[in-house]
Length: 264
Image (cartoon, rainbow, N blue to C red; front, side, top):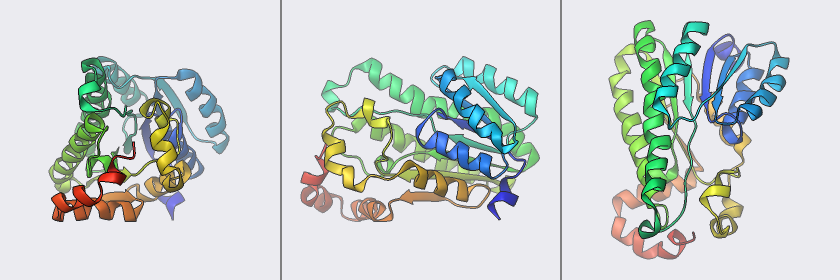
């Protein structure tokens, strides 16, 4: 069923050089989709391309730092000129740094918002006109459980993911009459290189290692949602319950969960 759903579809993935971006690409390729892969590391993309082309599909790669909105426009214009349309956009590029708010340099704050929020919006804006015109498409935004439940030492990162969820939810309603699906993916910690930057001291990884999701599992859930009416993917489900309890009983949750929330 999934293979029939994705075969021949044009899928663009940002942040595709590693982690769940690369795993999503592998699963899409195995199901017959044509791919456009975007990331800062063109060398890693070229290596991945060689692997994926074994599935007898089309794979294009472009070097792209999504904080550069001028470059986003240039790259997406090239993509659309070459393949005509984009069926699915996966906004996966992003990064975080865990530190207390008073320690966060302004350039670092701007950098996180430029990549996680502005870059995501800029990529999305490049596919919206054609998706609306064709009345077909799917936008998948990789957010985070941090966008639902903020924790100490992740004030800036959580703020960016709150913004992504707000944008995603509004976009879903705007596109409801155009048959364009919009999905937010809200995973907890994933065992990827994300934490090489986010968790410099390794404290958080050590504390949550037993709860970490495997990137292949997250990628599988994302790919299974493609071209369906899936509103949100929350992983793991038990962690999402924390955000539900927080909405209902915020003061109690903060008091009781203080030790866990400070695990960074």
